Image (cartoon, rainbow, N blue to C red; front, top):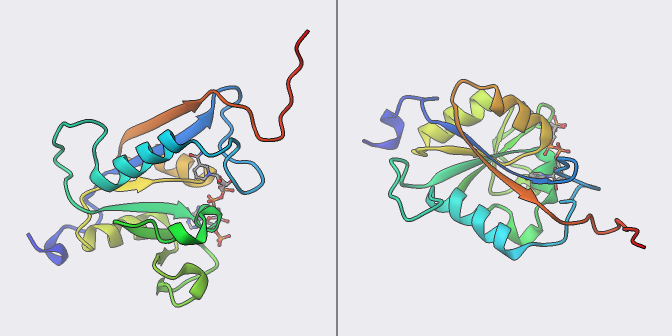
Length: 167
Ligand SMILES: NC(=O)c1ccc[n+]([C@@H]2O[C@H](COP(=O)([O-])OP(=O)(O)OC[C@H]3O[C@@H](n4cnc5c(N)ncnc54)[C@H](OP(=O)(O)O)[C@@H]3O)[C@@H](O)[C@H]2O)c1
């Protein structure tokens, strides 16, 4: 089936989120609350690029889409924007532009809401769209009828500036 024959909006939404085990925090100062964790980043890349958590073959093989809020996009290091091997979609209510004309969003499709993002991903041929943050986008995706899976990682680490007391 060619991409533009796919039924728009028919693909599942999957939430992939890492939370701080102590308080469910997901962000701090525009970044992740914990220092870089290579294994978790590799896991994120594997799931969102190959649609697999294991060697099991999924029915969602093929290029996936990642949907994120504007601040999550801006939190990505420049060299990882857009996230390679995935259709990158950025949500913004105030910045409109489809295939982003603005240099800041170069390589991403700008959508004004989750439904537009999902429709666009389906029309591009994506079999699945991963919702990768931030907080409000996670909330919206979790209550969306097309959300069929949540990949939750609990991080047992301290925030970079967090101190502990021991006796
Ligand atoms: N732990 C994790 O798994 C994880 C994952 C992702 C991000 N993060 C962290 O979370 C923080 C960023 O997340 P955040 O919650 O502050 O912001 P965010 O969700 O990334 O971005 C918020 C912005 O996205 C746009 N937006 C959100 N929902 C929308 C919708 N339904 N339709 C249209 N536009 C929408 C709005 O942009 P406009 O203002 O332009 O309208 C809004 O101001 C960072 O610290 C980041 O490191 C953590």
